[in-house]
Length: 404
Image (cartoon, rainbow, N blue to C red; front, side):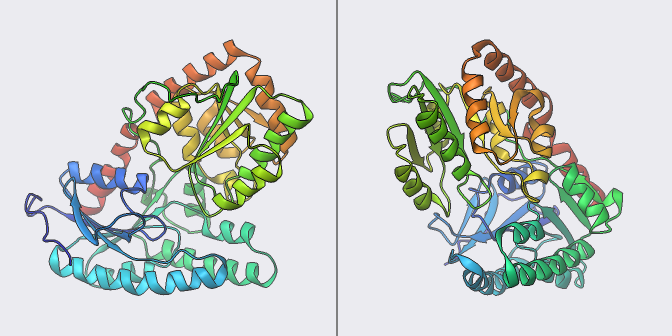
């Protein structure tokens, strides 16, 4: 059963309901940062999201009321259809529960997918506002993930949903300037209705901790990866780059640690075994912040192997910002938004070339002074531009203008 609403919430303040489908909260760090920022500013905040690894259907965390529901995670188009067929009606039902129990003045939806405009549009008829928090380019995702008739159907439907979402939204939150440009051009959103709020951790998230036991596995160099293991994240490129380093260059002095999980985790572990990399590549799975910091603290460099495609080229990779927060030099493919985020704190390989990616890793490992300087500049760039504390103002201005 749902727990009673927290009695410590401010009465009479404006209320915001955030809808999320693809990740649970507070695991979805961006949504949780937005929610906590809004709550601290005096807004009452509720969230509807999948359960994920959490046990409670409803709980109040840091004054934020979180409603969750079980949601299957299945592969393929059929699996996505089942997932969405569950998520939309359940979210709609929970929205009415929140409406009558707690009330809200704004519905904010985070994508993917782009179908929550149906809920936002309905409640606009009741005098509420609708804000679209644009996390991902769904049409570009469909364009790169599918082929043939699947690509044609999903691309067409996703473009329709995206246009409807932009048209319905009173305000749009873009994660970077590339997404803002899409809102202006493809979505025909008025320039003063689109605000850029980048994703980045708080300044104090990555506190220094002692390194974990034997993080290098007895080898002189450590290369780290932190992130998701999905179709667009390029872990297959990283494993092929590691195979090039180990087998072609005969560099058995480099250890790779891969932190995170995702749909392709089991497939990537099998690929690692097939490439004969088990002595040199360690998968940790998802681990707590303190543990992952201990694992990455001694890393000589970190990698962002996201390949160039229509989605990745225009998207900001959270892992890059997190590496900079930890003062780590970076090797990445030469993507547009990767350069915007990292600048000269990364070296860039020719896009989608695993061999050159491996070569850039080896070259940077041979330059300790360069690595140190890149790490220092990255941390400085994070502190001065990219930390969440620099993004909060834009988010709060948007809501002040929207709600008065």
